[in-house]
Length: 299
Image 1 (cartoon, rainbow, N blue to C red):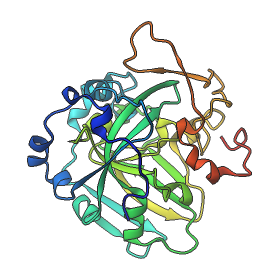
Image 2: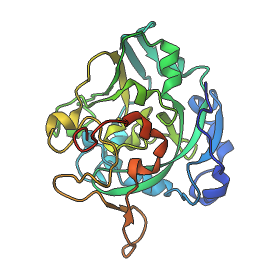
Image 3: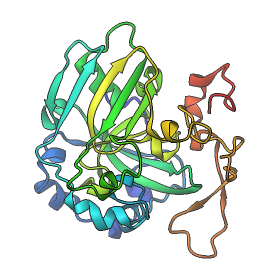
């Protein structure tokens, strides 16, 4: 069921046309996006102007392709994204190895302009094209008793220089509580600016959870598992003191090595002032998910 989340602006209100290629030309050559059908729902709030496609695709964290911000754009061309399948297992009614097109068939692709906040205290505004994760989970059937959704990134050692260097313990894994996964804001993105995801942005499909730090939005997903146990997550395994399971954007809870009270918007210019970080990255509608929780303890 699409359109659970709505706004009072359309993308035409906030996005400069020069920033992206002609929509019709793109769709003509993009079966994955065009066959499903794009539906626009607009921006999250007044005044959100997206970063340019060049900024979004050249300033990335994707450690499988290197630790520098420019490394993914330089190295990710080697990623093989077709054919692509996703294994769905665990506490689901219809487990299996799904071809990506089959998993998404019949579901509605929507335009979502979201704030994106990195744990490193930089930010962007990104116009995603994607499908609500809830629609995918409902399609495969979530069984009673499932409490969490676990995700896994592809591993292609021959194509991923960071995997060969063992920058992290690969495959990269992430997880959400089931109510977080089913929230209307939680998106499985397949495009940006109506273009298929660039490899460095997590092609061909990635998670987007806009109220959490960016590393929660796992890229290039090949496995989705429903479970009743909190799943391990890569950065928490690497350093639990610095990276909690929840990792909600919270200006009141600093990273042990830097403040989270402000952020630098990528593309703002050398002398641009830092901006205040918003609680839940400016998405107060998720606050009810954490009622009664100490967010300094469950960070």
